[in-house]
Length: 474
Ligand code: ATP
Ligand code: MG
Ligand code: MG
Ligand code: MG
Image (cartoon, rainbow, N blue to C red; front, side, top):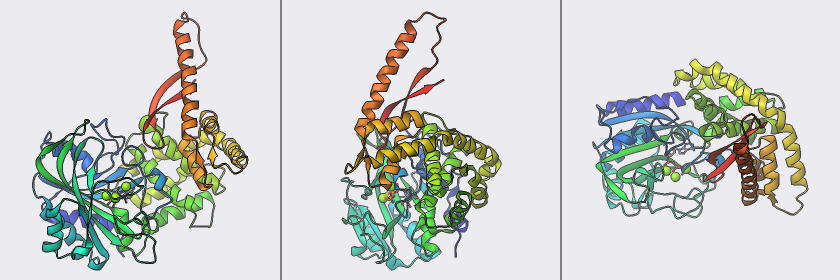
């Protein structure tokens, strides 16, 4: 059985043998990109190289990049615990060509790595290409020898939750281009259909590798300018390919996750290893710890607020399994055992990570129980109603520190929804009150001290759209 760590090494070595420079994973906090909340793909650290604004001493690179998708264009927070394949934090294995090779070699490398190095059975693989990309279609069909029924043409995303989209973009602006993706068929016993079919949201056919032919730079007005040189950017989820090699279906069944889930069960004090909440906690300890390693600290705005929201979700899931005391920070050691070798910065900072998590746990513990009681009461009073009123969501947020997405998480478990519009109205009203209070304070002569000041901060709401949030600080 191939361990995740061996797989990571095997990938890097293969591409090194093809003259690729092995480059370290960059930070989860993008170095020079205010358009992006977190590094969400391997190409992020090479964005300027694709744009021709940064020149490297190599034209081929390979990485194992730590990624977070918990906000912005790529947001998988709501998928965690519900699908077999999504995490908030994952590792993306990638190979890159900066104006060097293009479609033909990129496809050949991907196929050789999967079928010769990893020895995946070819009959379980199928691929997608961008609808108009005859060149990629022909490479798969004529050069690789894949039968036409295994090559699916997909256009732009027409909506839907996970709908395939064979035009990849890092965000609303930046490098982008048509792509070709490799899928693995986990078998008839799992619900789901091939990409492009109405049942593709299922987890039978799991996307493992995205090979992007970087050709354009999209600007804010939507126009696409050609890149200086056609390039290649690929990304394969380490956890997804590990699952295949370890003969399991879900990412959460691989070695690394099983160990984290066992550790989580122990600190939470439960015997039921199949509990959905344990998967969520195991996922969240990775994203939260690595965000802190990369310098993010819990706060009420921007990246720090994403971190705080994920920590609070994890704590709520522990609480749901009956753990009323602090537990989350205790998982840092288990995480370090799994990932410290690949990421020595985690080992170096693990005490700091644990102490920041502990502080957050202690702070939220004060209001979590009370807030949950209020939420449960509100739910029991709903009767036939399926929507938790915005006022309740706001009260939980404002008084008990429940981010709206946390309340929504509880709602979903009860087949309910939250009134997002009503929540926004309550938020606006509070904002207006605060604004008049702060105008008032500006009119006051010096020497008068208000007991609280108000800050306005933007953060990503449930849909990733930007809403204004107001926080009272003393
Ligand atoms: P999906 O359709 O399954 O959500 P995606 O199309 O959003 O995946 P890409 O943006 O193409 O993913 O990223 C490249 C690869 O990274 C994917 O093929 C997959 O192997 C991996 N990947 C993407 N998102 C996640 C995630 N949330 N957790 C784990 N692996 C992921
Ligand atoms: Mg996705
Ligand atoms: Mg996809
Ligand atoms: Mg994809």
